[in-house]
Length: 407
Image (cartoon, rainbow, N blue to C red):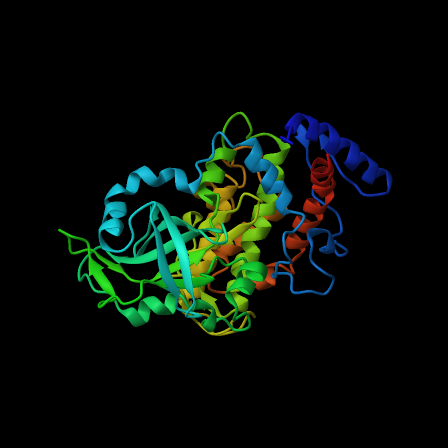
């Protein structure tokens, strides 16, 4: 069913007025339902978001109720979204290079799993993305029908070298995690888009092969992981479309995605690693609304640092600052104005759609400005009154999306 923001606005007032009758102070305002600054949040129910009482707040428990909010948003803005595999035309040169070295497009090949040694028959789709150290294409298992995003390492510039040891390490990323060692578990409870398998062409004499007529190297290892629908930057751009930017669904999705982002970085800290490239393009959104962190090629192990007073590195500082910047972009706030608020409280914030609630403003400002004196780490942030207010507000409108799912 397609989500109708007008219908949701009416339904949200009905639901929230019913809650108000039970003694919860909520607000239904003209132009859309908004919780005014929530009151006491000490009893905020994390269980409604799929988190058992007493559980680690950073961990994810399957597909959670809040994911349905983002799923409905994707339906609403589907015409503005550019699915990742639609971008294939921009990478024809790399696609031809992959065809000339290892794997022609639309051809079924037999490769071998590096993890298990078992053969697999895979069919390759087009290259649709490229980073500094790899390119990504679609692939499918011809025996099971499973679809993947597959990443292959590339060396695009001087010194045109590729270490087999370093490249293989990317396929064993979870070995560096403090507690979650299985890749499928890392996807399920951390929402880290790490490879579930890596495959190679057998009987190749060399690990890396140069594209004919070029010094660009392509490695003989292919990392397989679930295929995302789009990335967070594309979702942010779609939410700023004038047709939807003032709707309740956009406001609700921003709150849910804010909570998802804080949990992702909290999980990095719980696992004792620094991602090294935390930005919108590496935050991938599935069609079912789940948000994942991808591209761990720059990840470093930093030791588990989760409490104020630990010896924090500049890398962790940078990652928390990046979290603040991504949250700022998510809310459509022009960064310069946002950071000037503390010194110019009367200066208006430029926003795309409704501004963030004040508790969210305070959280974002702490990520931006708490260094180096009193660093607020996301693990700690999940326990703050602001995070509890965030959960409380998300819980208040979850019934709207449960209702839509049932119908």
